Image (cartoon, rainbow, N blue to C red; front, side, top):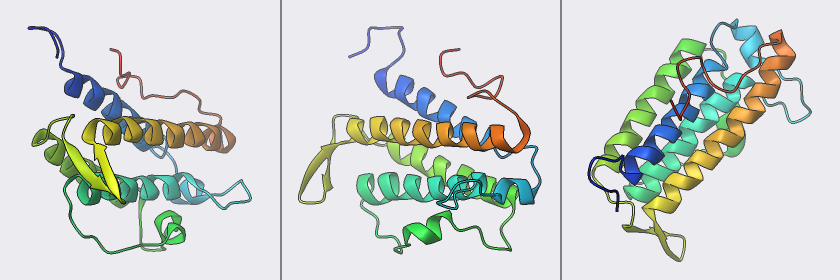
Amino acid sequence: MAESGSESEQHLLNRYLDAYRGAIKWKVQGLTRDEATRSMVPSGTSLLGILKHMAYVEQGWFQEVVAGRVLESVSTEEEFAVRDDETIDGLIASFDATCETSREILAERRLDEMVRFHDGELAIRDVVVHMIEETARHAGQMDILREQIDGQTGGFPPDGLPWS
C-alpha cells in the first residue's frame, strides 16, 4: 500500500502505460498516410498497422478480460491491416477512445482483484503490467520503423516521459 501523500501503485502503473500509449501515437504523427502504411519488413508490419493493432490489444485485455465483455473476434491479420478508408487521425481517435474506455474500466477495479483468464484467474495488476510491456515492445518496433522512414529517433514525445 502506498504511503500517505505518495503516488499509488495504480496511478504509477497508469502513468507508465499512458506514456507508452503516447509514444505509440507520436510515432505516426507528422507522416503522410503512405509513409505511415509503408512496410519495410517481411512481415508487412507498418506504423499505422501497429497503432491499429494496439487498439485491439487494449480492447482484448481491458474490455474482454478485465470487464468480461464479449467482443467480435478479429484475426491478427485484420488487426494489422489498414483499410483504404482508414486515416492516421481516425485511427489515433479510435485508439484514444479505446484507451479512455480502458482507463474507465481500471478506475472501477483494484489491482489485486482477480479476473477469469482461460481456465484460471489473473490479477488485474498482471494485466496492467503486461499491457505496459506489450505497449512498450510495440513502441520499440515503431521506433525502428520510424527511423527507417524519416530518421526520427526517440522513444517518447518531448512532453511524454513516464518519469517526469
